[in-house]
Length: 388
Image 1 (tube, rainbow, N blue to C red):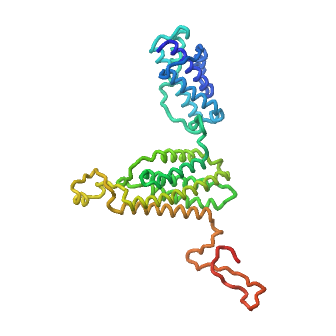
Image 2 (image 1 turned 180 degrees about the horizontal axis):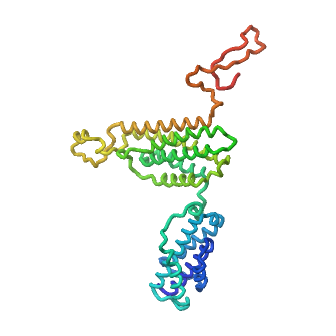
């Protein structure tokens, strides 16, 4: 590339690397070399210039880190070291390629500094690349992903829309929706198990929520010989966003009332999606839209359909597999209902009769103004807990 473009692009790379390394314990020898390099005025480099691309990429990273100094300070030693190694490896790559591509302009103090930079960063180039974990791995420029309530609302909207569509619903939509409901239930179970001191009955709902999570996991486990093709990209993205919101604890501090409230709202949304999930599955089964592998149908089907191949897929000719899917979905829905009943109507507030006992009766005192003699008490049928 032209010498002026090389100088300007290399100057941009060096400047942004200094901004990054200054935040994450930079190696003194590398910083000395970087600070000794002359600064060049930014030029209008070609858009397809590789060194310009690297420089702008480091600039975005530097802007992101400098906009979140507290997150950088709270990052663990391993992630700081991983980020530092990747930046140093990038500098090593730029230096070695620059030396091999063309002679560096003399205005840049000759190739000596670049050769020193390549030597000083050589060890970092052998460090395997790895993902950064939270909190620094979640940083991004632009609009914040929002809280759990927003992630749940977007997921529920996308799931219900796709499940209601006879042309867009897929086996992935059923499986992913069931799996997400299972994740919400398991997260809620862990959240309600935290002592809050305000709603002790929520702890009792933790076990039923765990069972509901397990039931929805089974509902998500479709047999490999059954499928319903198509693409549901939007639901995939919304589900991934919700998984991230749940995994990154955007629920408030453990034990905080906001954390409990967020999960109660998430469960209400999951209940609506679960009902839609079941109704959509019934429609798919009734319309015979499921496809099954010919190999799974056995030799009898091949005998009656000599032109079929074991590798073919055909519209589901029987209801056994559909009934199994519907049964798992129904059991999961009941488990979720049981858990929500436990959460919204804790023991001590329900008037339902205990199994094995007769119906409960309510004792109501007779009014004193009665004109006719009555027994001291009267028995009335079970009520909703309000005596009139």
